[in-house]
Structures are given as structure tokens and as C-alpha cells.
Image (tube, rainbow, N blue to C red; front, side, top):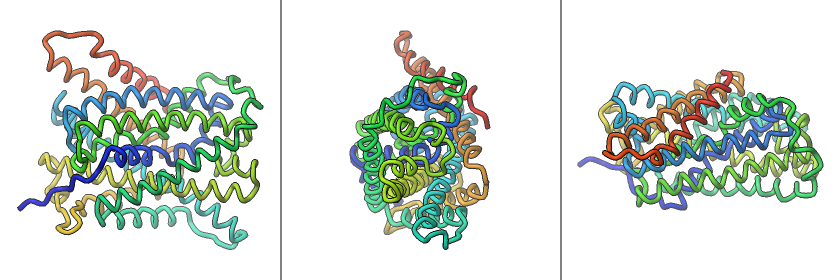
Length: 398
């Protein structure tokens, strides 16, 4: 008897998984690099990136309704174009996800080492790369326990990470308006920052890869995609406004723990520790959930008889694809050996924007194949999504 994945995930859990995957290094770490590019107009960069995410998210929502399978992008592009392009895209998705996991794990490591040195007065000297590797190993160990346990852990971590952002927004209210948020020194910098902070929105596309573990995939997966983008888009834009207003773009740009610096300016060392604590939850949650969704995608493509049967092995008791989990952990660890956080993030964005472009084009092609009467209105949303992806791809410096 074939062992299958368990259908355990509700709409709430899928939405929280989406938010948990999205809220990570993009906002807790890369916001500082974004500020160095966009200055006071950083919030505009987040807003632009959210537009790209929502239009591409709508395409994902429609396709996940039509094809509720873990293989996600592979299946969408195969249905629209051909198997060769689908396979190339699947490899691109897996690479971008695993590079992304390494970026976020390094973000976790940066925060962890900073907090540790602060608490121990600089007596602890530990490699951030080693911390990132330990984090990935811990995530993979927990993923092997089962989807219910994984969902519980990720939900708890996501709630804490959201609380951290809400705390920053609330306590920054008295400072809002102190700086000119409409000051634009370099218009091109806004687009370049958007292509960087778009990394902060990567994660919603992981939800369809859990379709075969969702209780009601056709209804809940598309809705969870849209809800996760809207909630994080609002949070990010307001957090960017709060951070710029509190310490200014220049200070934000030079900090290794940008949001921790915001909290420090308000509450001193205790504020820094509290927000850093929330940042650890956020970066842990994102790393964990990227590894979860990518392992399921590899399993889903193996189901399509494209990847080796090796990736179809499922634990009899835990019902988890253990070979897929171990594979994503190993490759992510290899990527942590790269030094530049910005370069890794930009590389991830380049990969994933290419994938989003292909997904938007796939929806257009599928609509054309399925309908005798072609209506322009059917193509508006995926076409806008494709155009936004092209704009950010042209702004990306890898």
C-alpha cells in the first residue's frame, strides 16, 4: 500500500505558514540595505514590491485552484508550455528557495551572534556561518517529525515575529512625521531597493506546494495566498515608515540589526534585546518553512515521475518525505558558505522573479487554450504581474 501525505492543514494554518515564510530576513535584516538604496523613500520600495507580489499572487491563486498539487510551478508551466521548460523552472524554483533559506539562516545568525555578544559582553566568539548551519540542521530534524508538529512550531514562531513588527509600529508612532518621507534623492534607487526588498515578499508561492496536505486545497490555498500578501504588505510598508521616522535612513543603512537599532533608540538596550528576540523567531520561521515547502515540491515533482523515486520515500509513522527533507537541508547548508548576504538575496530575487514571470505567462496561455472567446479582461491581472516582474528584473543587480 502506498503511503501518502496527510491532509491536516486548515485555512488559518496555511495563511500563517504563508506569513511565516514571508516575514523573515527581508524585513528584519535587508531593510537596512534597502534604506541605503532608497533613502527616506524606502516605504515606496516596499509598496512597489507588494504590487508585484499581489498580481503574481493572484496568478498563483488561480492556478492553484485549477491544479491543486504540490508540484505547483512545474505543473503550471507544463500545462501551459512544455515539460522541458517546466523542468527548468522547477530547478530554478528549488535553487531560489534553497538560496533563500541560506540567506534567512544567515540573517538569523547575524541577529543571534549580535545578541549573544551583547549579553555576554563580547566574550562569545562564534562563527555566524556555523550558527546558520546549526539552524538548518535543527529545522530539518523537526521537519522529519510530521506536518502537524511542523505547523504548530511554525505558527507559534510566526505569531511572535508578527508581534515584533507590531511593537515597532506602535512605539514608533510619536516619531512619524519627523523626517520627510517623500524625499527622493535617487528615483532609480527606489526601483533597485524594490528589487532587493522583494525578497521580503517571497514565501506566498510556497503555499501551493502544500496543496496535498491541505484539508480543502481548492478553496483554502488560493485564499491563503492573497491573505498572506495583503497582511505582510501592510505590515512592511508601515514598518518601513516607522523605522525611517525613528532613526533615519542613514542610520538604518549602516546597522547590522536595523529593527533592533530602532528599538534601541526608543527603549535602550532592553528594546534592542526584545526586538532581536522577535527577529530570531521571524528568521527561524522563514528558514523552517522554506525548507518545508521546498521538500514538498521536490516530492511533488517526483510524483510526476520527473525526479528520481528516491525523493518519494515517506516515513511510515511520521508520513514525511525524509529523503526530500535531507536533500534540501544539505544544499541549503552549502549555500551558507557564500559570504555576501546582499548578493545571495539579489540572486534569489533574480531566480524567483523569473519564475513569477513564467507563472503569469502560463496563466495567460492556459486561459487562451481553455476559452474560445478571448476577453481582454481575462489577461489584465497576469499581464500586469508579468510587466511588474520585468521592471524589477531589469532593476536587479546580481
